[in-house]
Image (cartoon, rainbow, N blue to C red):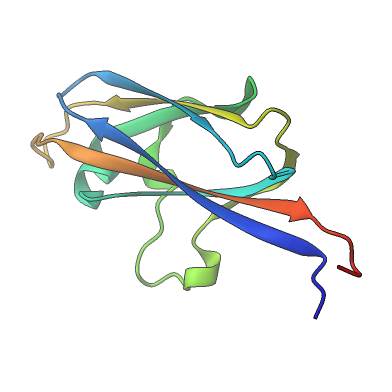
Length: 132
């Protein structure tokens, strides 16, 4: 059987260890990835990510999401089908594959701080010959 594209799924984590601070993550996409299709955001404490989080995301210095973009806009709930949980970006050429994320934790009355993890999933494709 032959496939036109090969999907690469990667996971990157940022540890949020203190309240009201920014945390930088610098990640490299798989060297075989040609196009970034989408991103999904989750956490071991979705409530803190929802209420307290915002971020800026860049791929090779191309802004995907501006500074202060609220995390709750990148989350999906359990009522969303698994195949629909990523934020689609189209097909952005990955170039050198450098993903920079500046995550900011901010106080919120509905969510007291405790350390948590922010997880970023990326979905990329590798173009493969149709006859492979």
